Image 1 (tube, rainbow, N blue to C red):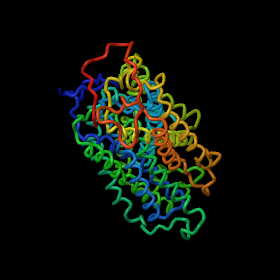
Image 2 (image 1 turned 90 degrees about the vertical axis):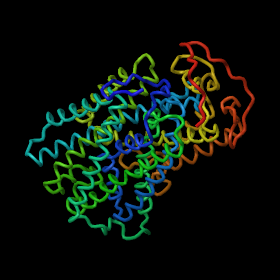
Image 3 (image 1 turned 135 degrees about the vertical axis):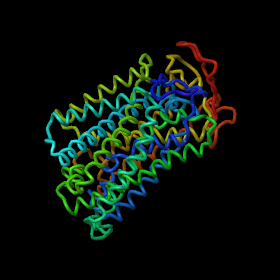
Image 4 (image 1 turned 180 degrees about the vertical axis):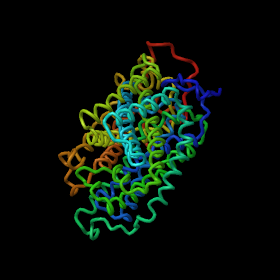
Length: 511
């Protein structure tokens, strides 16, 4: 069955029928890469220079963080094809029928944060470019119009759904990439690959905390996609080879070297020619970029802001509406997207004109990612120990307001996975170190380096495997082939009762 891009998508979090799942791994690549091929990623790419690293050191930190983050993210693409639904719903297999709300709210909060950052950065770049290009006076009214227009455009694309998003990203991937490549010519005369940064040598006591911090900021970008990667991969047929699905997600993140390196290179130019814009106390990368850009590149910059921001905004807001509808099934995907979209746009206006929340949103997004990483570890290790096998009927129990099934565990909660997530996220927050924004009680133990992500990831992996060994999960959750690497317990599975009728065509799946 072929769906027109002008036909509003009606599917929510129920399993997508096999006949309607015609997307390819290439489509997943386009959506994931298009959503990150933006100004927001360029800003993240500028952080190594903000931290005092040289261009070469910053490039090494960027590659390290990006490869590690892409490897962590790639398995999260497998749940969509296996279960035909988003990752939050799939997480019920591991956190329990009720525990899956953790994934829904992580996805919801992450999407709102990144949608806001996308609209703010793109709107500011558009207004700033118009001012430099055509002498248009900057004013609160003009910024407000830019935010409203841009936010509304993103909302319209999201209401139409997956097929329309796919079309937008097909254009965005090529167009934004071309504009970034054009930037290589724009800044070729000013860029110095030998930019030295502020450290005389790696023996400086602040060097390694800065290097690790820069790498972790880059790593956080792929991790931010973890909660809603299944929003797009659920349209890929279940029979698609897993290596191709994971490869698409992995390569999409590696491709973001383009905006990351653009941000790193231009930040080094800004540091040399307009250093005031990179004041660590109040950095303004977009303003600095406009200040050092040649006049002929203002229009391409505006196009990057428009195209890239549209990609990020749509991928974020689409996931927001989908997850809201999964937590509150009385709302359709369209209704939930409209509600959250309007709320997010109002939030943007409040943050920009009333509360000055730009820095707070950046902190908020970082803290969300610290909490998301342990959840991803539970999901990935759960997939491995389950051999990719899931009961598609039992996964939908929460959405139908039912009880019981393979994933009911203890009153709808899998205390093993929930305990691992809570403890790992809490300890990760203790090690967070965002100077001037949020520093946890243990944030200074590593000489100023932010260890929240690695601590959370390692602790989650160790704790989850330990609990599975000491307190085995029921044999029924593992399917016909049984568990891998862990043992299972003999326990009865309560029947699915209540709610809407259970459909007969929702199969169990093996990834």
